[in-house]
Length: 313
Ligand code: UDP
Ligand code: MG
Image 1 (cartoon, rainbow, N blue to C red):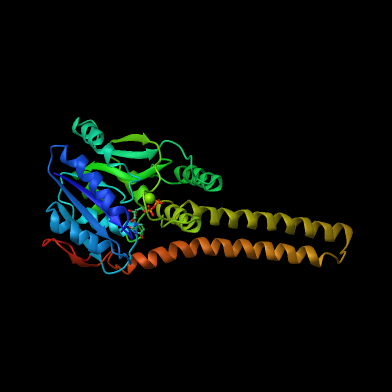
Image 2: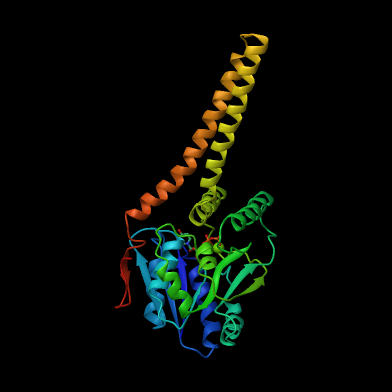
């Protein structure tokens, strides 16, 4: 059996189209399937549409959150409640083409790989500034973390049960799936495809949300920013020591010319800035630790059509 996890947030326009398309594909795949929709606290008719679909098709399961917990939580809820031997994650907006599923299943069944991941072949159709930041992000995070994160990787994946179980076992509160997929390892086949536009509705990501997500990814999968803070500290101490020696030398040899309050203030502001910057980096890690230590649930399910569901985890 194959489980398709579909996180949905305000997808009332896309859902009917998605369902039609995906059903056409999976019915021809001669394997059992379940469609596991996760309604992430949508404010539109998404839940009603899901209930309608579930009423007409016993393959449709839905989990509905008590509020919007974010796509990461929605995917996690899906993984926690998926019954399939194979598990896939896909978006509801048709940007992850269901037509790729048969090919992905075929590669997986050959047994050589544990998961088939997709990535966009290029970044055409994206604002240049965003592309530039995205490339830089992948470059940096691959340098400073041990999770292997592929440029342009999407969350659209098909994987074996073992891998899904490994993802469930990564129960951290601050979730960054691209990092988690990379961190757990397993043999992954990368399938490139042309980027497709959303069929309906609009994206929930703007530039700043993406930027924050990128910073989160770095903090969650690397301790290098903390080392940068320490390096700054050592460098500054070393410089001030050299300056001290130079000043003592100048005073003893040439006397004491009183001048330069402006440069003193500049140096103070500069060092103050660096201190605040480093404190900020540490603050990021402390904040994450604080959130982790509270052990709050990742999601709360208020409604579902399944009996055996982990409602809170
Ligand atoms: N999504 C979600 N919760 C959120 C935001 C998004 O479940 O808080 C879902 C959304 O319904 C879609 C998928 O995540 O199925 C990808 O979202 P979107 O298409 O907005 O992102 P993009 O494709 O633009 O990166
Ligand atoms: Mg999308």
